[in-house]
Length: 320
Image 1 (cartoon, rainbow, N blue to C red):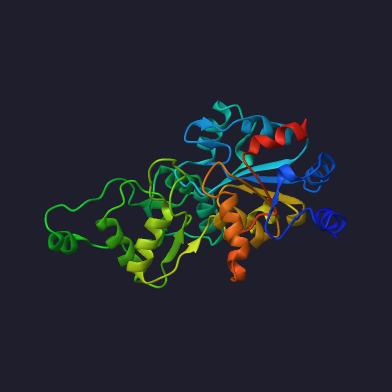
Image 2: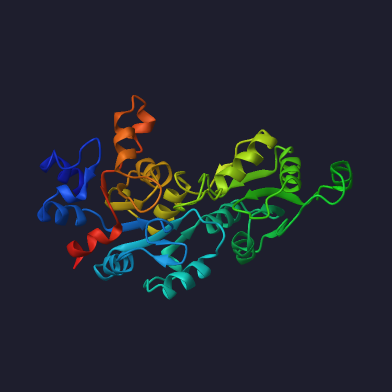
């Protein structure tokens, strides 16, 4: 029996089916909860930073987790950066992390192909975050950069000659996504032997006053055209769980997943058997949790976190 299960049994009203507000717990209950996990996984955008600005006391909380001996990982669906690039950004913001603390979807996609002894070429809809991770494992690629209609649609279709060496398509976030790229990706995927990977399915980015389409919008466009479903690397899919257990010997029962988005971060935790904490500095909030909890659909109720709080910085006073 895990420490978390023991805690649930000892304090049956502490973790309600509708999610427990951290502010409603006593200091001793919070202390018991904090001691019930050894590994902390945290999303980045909307949890510890937004764009290039850290959220209040998020840096202090993350560094204190590490100082207290917790095994810590940034688990991000962002495919636009390599692990070293994430480290550069994080260190500049004051986080005491290194490359082994970063698990990104670009890294996972490259590792997935490497594990299959993939030797062909990848058509990439995405950014250099993906291609540099492919370079790191010696996998060739094509497709990066802008690719728009030159002349008429008929001319573009007629002049496209599929590369016979392409054996996989990876779709991630691509600010240059276009009709031409969708056509090429779907053409390659018309061959059932070509591997189809989506980095993640996030619908949009957590911006306060405008909508920025996320990778999921692009993946769904390619999926519709290709009439095939991708193998998705990012949250909430369980491939991350396998990497954590195999490569880092993480115990799911003693692991906490922190996020701002219930249908990726919190659902990943539920899919992997992790404990879950939602912060209200990104996509979802307490009102959303209440709606999920009241749903008649069992899958929707899985989106309810164990604990929620207004911001990650709320934990600081309990960690020192």
